[in-house]
Image (cartoon, rainbow, N blue to C red; front, side, top):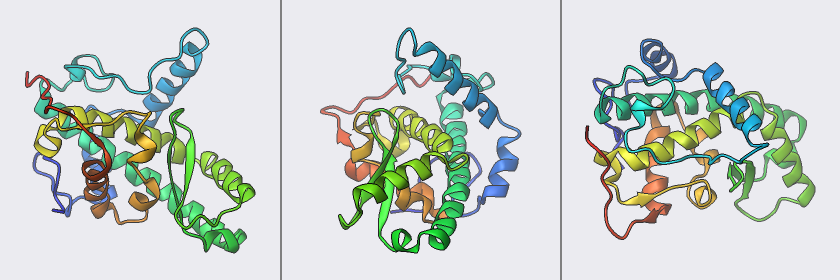
Length: 226
């Protein structure tokens, strides 16, 4: 798999570290953590009346998606959405690394077991037990601990929505050949494997997971190039 997968104007995957990426995003119309949390609050409030979809396809998302008011076409939207995903993954990685370090100190018997995590159909944390050795109580402990690790679930969910948007709109990478929604997400993405890598390698990993695991469309779908 090539390291520089997504077409981000002037920015290569091997050159962009988390600090550089944050600097770039400060100049771009990309959602902040505050905006993400506001969306989560709105979703939570509105769910009393109607449960909103986790992600919904938009033909021209830059016209309606909060935080992308300055994007004027598909190319700009994909570039900025790609950078937003990279930032979400970078922040999720910081939280995950901290969690794993603490787990090794407090529960070494669990930390020594191989596991990852994903999001289930309700966008809740789901543990992936690679060797089928976790007990029910250990699995429950990991779900609760990961869910309550500051920023981890928040940025994982935001990255997941970004993955779905890029599958729909980044035609250079995905060619409109794949489907990804929250119902199938747990069978496609393993955040544990993604976040265990360096910032420079995370992008190629999540792209590879989608290309290898996501359902393929019968016919390639290409969204608007406006």
